[in-house]
Amino acid sequence: MSRLACMAAVLFLALLALSGCVPDRGPTMRPGEDCLSCHGAGTGAEIGPAWSVAGTVFDGTFAEQEAGLRGAILRLTDSNGRKLSLETNAGGNFYSAEALAFPLQSACIEHGDRVHCMLREVPQGSCNVCHAAQPRWTAPGRLVAP
Image 1 (cartoon, rainbow, N blue to C red):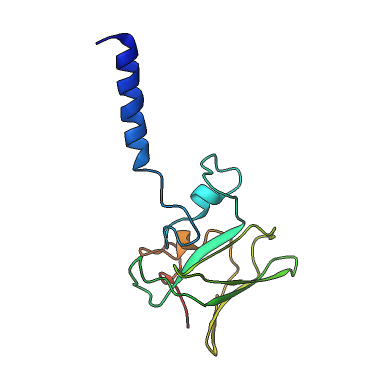
Image 2 (image 1 turned 60 degrees about the vertical axis):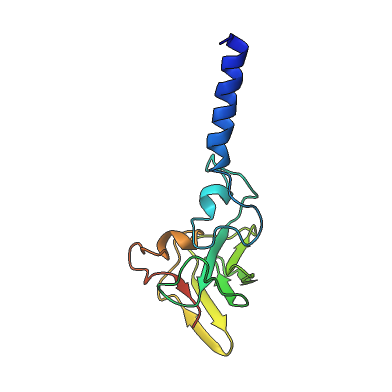
């Protein structure tokens, strides 16, 4: 095999391998995953716009990835008192590039006439890191609408 053909084959295989790593793009992509691992400023893995906060709201603590909830409202207050409201899309995802000072002082989810708020400060903006199918720290699991 010629050197050029060998290089072309290696390039083709590399592109083929990478194609499995490129997610579907758009606002409903990859619900429940760590959004800021790709959309966080300075992570070195940015493949989309950098956001300060992002996550997914589900209809149950042990919901499947496809069970994101549309129309939930997140009300956030940062450590400087700045307030931000976000609405979940068809995949249950929410995100913002607005500058926020962490830790957030409050984070509440509203759905219908019900409200559920975190009982502690929010240490960082990738909500799905703690509120995952297998939760971390004291998170109860998925972000769930009340």
